[in-house]
Image (cartoon, rainbow, N blue to C red; front, side, top):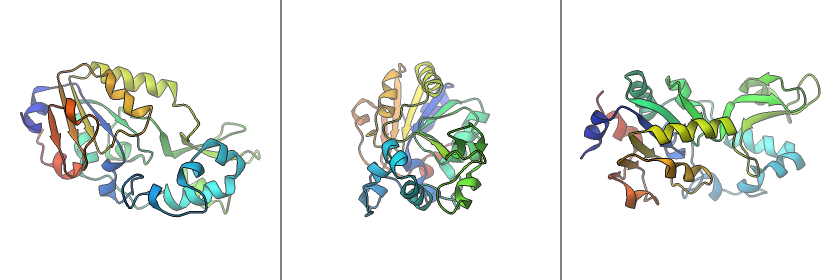
Length: 235
């Protein structure tokens, strides 16, 4: 059975996605040969994206963060737009994403569970005041609130737990799905990758450039670009 047929016959579809969804918007992924984890910095990216490094060296953290995690020119691609259309037509019940770029929301998706947070949300660690992305971009070094506290992006760093309410919503959406589509993720990041184990439906679709651990359990595996694949779907 093809992807179009699987989407046609189901009405509680959940999309679980990763960095590969946004590469077609010009945002680099982490683990490919030219991804962030294969580039050279004074510190390994994994270290710079940890909470202990943030606390110890916020200036170096924000230098890397502005350089590599904020992609101002990125816009939703065909994958983001098709998922938003599927939701509007009552076919897709939720998007569960590991991405922090906010492109699903910008594309029009409303029920989005951002497992690792979003660069679009920022909050003072001292008083809790919210700030837009511009506050991080405009600061010459470490961004400070009017109260003197550091403004921290609402992204989940290594050594930090996932948000409990986001976990709850994502797990319940996956449990209730009649079709789970996994796209643009190597399923190498935990605990996020384990969320797909809550799926109880009959059909599983994997759309990814490379093989994933879920391929052997999938009803349909498509090795290709996710934007091009989803763009061909009619609703």
